[in-house]
Structure formats: C-alpha cells, structure tokens
Length: 427
Image 1: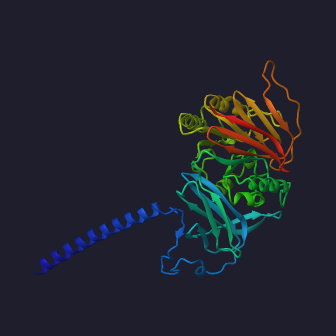
Image 2: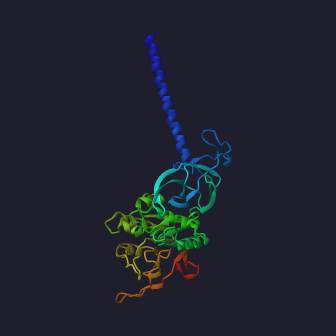
C-alpha cells in the first residue's frame, strides 16, 4: 500500500508539473500577443488607460496620478525609428514616474537617472531622462501627446509617417550650439522658430549641431534653443565633424533607424531618404559604402519610390572656406549619378550654395547659426562646365514641398525673406 501510494503521489506530482508548464506557456503567449498590439511595445512603457495593473486608478483618469514637482531641464523632442515608430524624449530635475497621454491612451514611463556636467561652470548635476517609445502608430495622422508628470503639464502634437504623395520637410544645419555662445544661440532660435511656422512633418539637420561633441551642456542648448520646432516635428541629424568626441552622447540623445549606426535610411510618403556619416569613413571597402550601395540601388528600383534624397555633412562641391570632401565626390557621387537621386543636402560651410551638376541639385545649407563664412571667388577647373546656381553668405533654411512628380524648394534667410526658389520635376 505504501508503495502504491508513493507511485500515485509521483504521478500527481508529474501531472501538476506538466499542467504548470502548460499554464506558463499559455500565459507567456498571451502576454506576447498583448505586447504586439500595444503601441508601447517592449519600450518599458505601461499602458494604464484602463487603470493600474495593481487595481489603482480604475477609471484611467489623470486626476488619480497625483501632483508633481518636476520641471523640464530639456524640452521634449521626437525621433523616428522606422516602421512608423517614434521615440519621444524629455528630461526633468526630479525623480518621479513619468506619465504621458498619447491620443486617448495613458502611459507610465520610468525615468533614467543621469549624472552629467552642464552649464558654464561644468558642475555635475543629476537629471532624469524619459524616453517613450511608441511602435506602429497609425499612419497619416496628427498624434497629440501631453506630458502630465510635470509641475506645469505640456501638450503638443506631431505628424506620424505620411503615406501620401504630398508632404513638407525642412533642412538646415551648422547651428553649432555651445561655445562660444555659452547660454544660447539666438540665431538658431530664430531659424528653428521660423521653420516651425511652416509646419514641416520632419526636419533634417545637416550636422555640426554642437561646437564640441564631448560637452554635454552644448547638447542641452541645441535642444532647448530649437524646442518650438523639435516638440512637433521629427528630427533627423547627419553627424558633423564637431560631433566628434561625443558619439556616446549622440547615441543617448537619438533613436534613429539602423540601430546604433550613424548612417541610416527611412521612407516617408513617396520618397526614400538616406543620411550618411562621413566621419565614419566612406570607401568601396568599408561597411557604410556597401550598405549605401545596396540601400540606394534597392530604393532606386522600387516603383513606389518617386524621389530619392541624400544628406551628409561635408559637401562634394563647394566654393566656400572649407574645400570639397573628395571622398564624397569620388565614392558617393558616382553612386548617386547612377540612380534617380535629384537632391543632396549638405552643410559644413556656413553659407548658402545651390549647385546643379549632372542632373543633381546640391544644397549647402550651413546657415543655422554658426558664424558665417565669407563668399569666395568661384574658380572652375579648365574646361569644366559652370555649375554654381546661387551663392550667398546668409543664415538660412529650406522648406521642401514634395508632391507626386515634383519637388519645390524654397530657401529663406533668418528674417524669413526668400533667397531662392526652384522646382525639380520627375518624368
């Protein structure tokens, strides 16, 4: 009897273990399915629209989340990760759980504590960074958000990825926030405030967004000077030479396609955009070049892609203070010439240049706030066909309106006066 009872107990134990394992598998599967349909994905966000998981805040109302002492140390800004997924960043001075409402959903966001050196005195300060990752948002929508966990809540909106053949984006660069400006760069504020009035869906900065990439405080100045624009238009950046020494800081500030690589591409509307990192090296033997060749040839052969845009910091053609980047001219340009690329945007020289060569328009958009470079005499190689269209020493930004078969480019100065307008028409 004892032996039979032992066998029965053993059988029960085995059955219980099997049932427990099956229950664990089913629960894990349901949890995975739930996260796939949740815009927060695996970002660390918690959707509490229907109440807290522990039973609190049963009606999902904001009146139950409490009051807050946090003030913004960095205004919110938006980056795009591809696949209609966005990350919203902001920072505060208090260690408090973040709460953000996105359309009709309420999310809880954990803070990350950071000790950094900011300010003219470079004293170490403690701040709290929040990064809310929203996956697979509805396309062609104006997404409204409100950061509730602040002493004074902040509400704004941004455009999700467009699938339409009609959209607007902006281009500028070389604002170079930081030394010698110290507390602020008034021209950068002017330029970004003017850009915001045109309501672009996103903005491309052509690089040199700070003066010294390794100084954390200069990044704060960049984001806060451009706060009016960055809180409602997704921000893309091409790394410039002044970001050198701060690549780890760069990675913490942004969340772009292609993981932690400094070159990437994305689709918007009927167009494909490529952003390169010349500081990472570009030659037929390296990884970035091979990636570029495959990416641009794939996009060029896609009938749904009507327009190809490319951005990198140092221009292949320029007549200003810095000489042309010959790696760009020797390795990138030949690839562009074999595709339907029609507009390339660069920076590096603090001026405005419009060059038209081999059916491609090149813009040097380096007038975002850094000290302007003087105009220089234009000298072509012997027998070379002139290709300079417009050259002006002026702070500037460009508004690009993309439609089905055409691209309209308008460039303005920091007084919002039109410098130049031209159209690119595809066959």
